[in-house]
Amino acid sequence: TQLLKQSPQFLSIQEGENLTVYCNSSSVFSSLQWYRQEPGEGPVLLVTVVTGGEVKKLKRLTFQFGDARKDSSLHITAAQPGDTGLYLCAAESRGSTLGRLYFGRGTQLTVWP
Amino acid sequence: NAGVTQTPKFQVLKTGQSMTLQCAQDMNHEYMSWYRQDPGMGLRLIHYSVGAGITDQGEVPNGYNVSRSTTEDFPLRLLSAAPSQTSVYFCASTPTGTGTGERYFGPGTRLTVT
Image 1 (tube, rainbow over the protein chains, first blue to last red):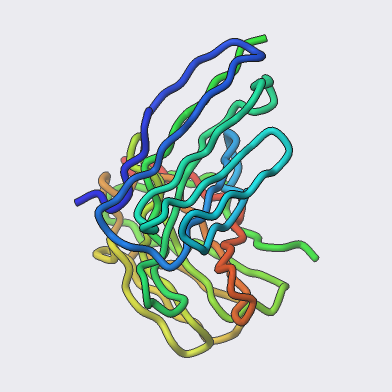
Image 2: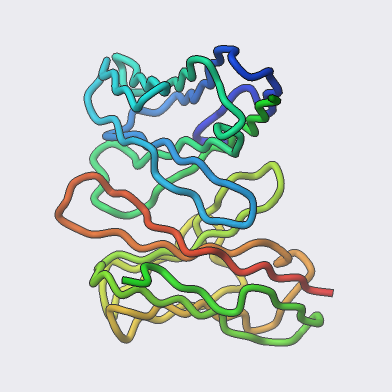
């Protein structure tokens, strides 16, 4: 059973385009994290969202946590080749102490110059 | 700080062989965990530890053992390797008490079992 469903699985776009990646679940989460992973390296945290409806911006990246804390989205404005990578969402179940962090299967983004 | 370090970076085993994947962190993080990453499967939690002497199972613990004798080290042992354990293994550590739960990942060990 897949706790976190990410879509799309693959995304290939031209430089300058906008895109949105989704992370959905039927479970409620106390927090949700977004990571980016480049080939041959471990994932690196981009952002953590905690409050339902929360919006966080990181330069051209905008992260939103759903009101019900079951889903999240990542929007990239004017994508650049440097944005290429595997984007992973991850979440710990509501009420859980620091224990199990579940990951989605990821969205592989390729931005062409 | 070196952060999270993993050795070896690459390893090839034959079915039935045993080995230990090493993981160390110098950030004094209490929480450490092991994940495996397979194509199209994301990262799946194998085992985790909330402190020295305490370990627990994750989603896919079968075939793997762990121990945590010090805060710094969290080795992962494969007692009898199987081809299904071919994967990339990531170790991660997390500071407790900060509230964010950020996992700091090592560079990974790419394991092939033939």
